[in-house]
Image (cartoon, rainbow, N blue to C red; front, side, top):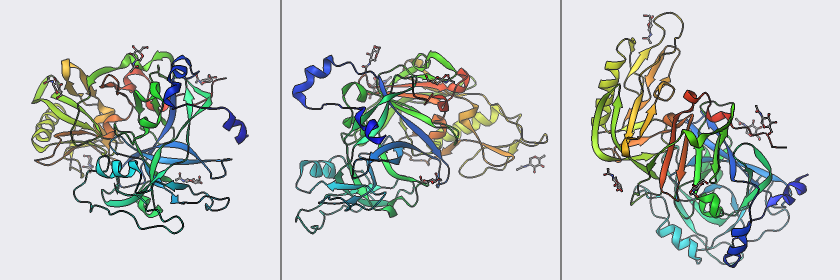
Length: 436
Ligand SMILES: *[C@@H]1O[C@H](CO)[C@@H](O)[C@H](O)[C@H]1NC(C)=O
Ligand SMILES: *[C@@H]1O[C@H](CO)[C@@H](O)[C@H](O)[C@H]1NC(C)=O
Ligand SMILES: *[C@@H]1O[C@H](CO)[C@@H](O)[C@H](O)[C@H]1NC(C)=O
Ligand SMILES: *[C@@H]1O[C@H](CO)[C@@H](O)[C@H](O)[C@H]1NC(C)=O
Ligand SMILES: *[C@@H]1O[C@H](CO)[C@@H](O)[C@H](O)[C@H]1NC(C)=O
């Protein structure tokens, strides 16, 4: 069976002199599709992408769950380094990778230009000599996205990553393989991660992030739809495809999207947009034009610099003054009592609109602005980032859930649907059944 699957793998040639042949080759798929799960068993809600890697004997797939990080400079996960692979040299259920030596170009490149930019981490020295070949390894600093603590990993050539192909509507029978570099970290690095999540998937603009290892048409567009539910996966696509979510099997989700430019940021491989104002029930909270706003898959809630936060909370409490308040529960500053009229009632609040370039509006509706924290308390899911927080706005994952997001790297623009619930669908509605 696994051999059969193996045979259906879509082989992609990277060799440059075959460019012409690639241009004429029409693949049967428009995209690759990866299931995205939500986790709430770590210090904060996080999301993972499931990718198949291979055993050393190349006969069986080992699935690996990677934390989705659209800001990380390179991919890293739990694995062992081995200079010499031979049958049985790799323990069961373990990925054994071949090291990238300190003498190779990639090592210097990652260490000097594409590493985590964190002044609190101690710089690492080149690795000790491993027995056998006498080569040195390539240590790189990693920052744990759950705890923010510094760690170390060793750069390596990774195994093939195998993912499903798609026509945007279903999973297709062909598989797609990519051959990334990744850094290996010991299992202790992942103790603070959600259960069974043992890696970080870099989906940033860094040349060592996943898109680099995909072929041309796929890498230009990433689409991410984070689920709000734990039981059914959301979806991550690469490829300039149409995208369909049930039950509307004939409506391209792209038709729901508005676009705003992605802004460059000198010290980050992440994604930034410009926000001009925040509007709540027709009243505008003006910001400096083009206020730099970061998109983050690691921050659980949208973080606002204190001055902006105070304006938003003041305005929001005015427009919700008919809802009984409750004592705030950290990290939130504005909460409501949802059980004053007997059993828990769900509250409905006005939209919080982020006004972007050309008057485009990203509407944050109740499902993305109010979080039920306890049985009878719900809170405005925005947090105070402090008086000097930079960037002034960081949009977090609670505001992304059930929003379809497109990162168009070719046109350098960001597409957003606002809540899919208003379109009677959600991120957990991709039909993962294989097309017949
Ligand atoms: C973790 O993975 C193991 C092995 O695949 C599985 O049995 C277990 O249910 C998973 N645990 C969680 C919390 O997902
Ligand atoms: C994606 O496809 C659309 C429609 O076919 C086309 O207009 C657009 O230019 C493509 N974008 C990229 C980045 O290839
Ligand atoms: C916002 O910033 C971007 C990048 O710096 C720039 O291209 C764009 O013109 C700016 N827009 C406005 C309205 O200032
Ligand atoms: C919510 O209101 C009800 C009824 O007034 C009260 O009994 C309950 O203690 C309140 N809960 C909180 C958390 O304020
Ligand atoms: C999901 O896709 C399969 C295969 O194309 C199809 O048979 C099935 O009806 C689809 N499910 C729904 C709910 O439309």
